[in-house]
Image (cartoon, rainbow, N blue to C red):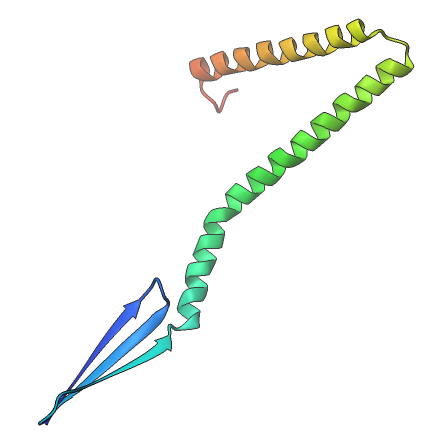
Length: 120
């Protein structure tokens, strides 16, 4: 009789399939399924989490900035209300603030394109 073995690792299902075929008068096929080595999956998981780390840091920072920016605007609004500014004056103040931001970003973009990001 002739014994043959084959091994296949299915990464999608995380299974290791081992087939043993024993050839004699009648062919028999035995399939055994086992979980793939957990240490290999740990390495893949670590690589995946290492790749996501910059995304998580940047997203968290942006979220925190958005919350604090909104909070500071609310504080300015309440302060202006306490100082008896009119609604038009508060709207004009926020409009000028936003226009200053547009001009600043535009100038920074032009300087970055002209002299490079490291200088600006």
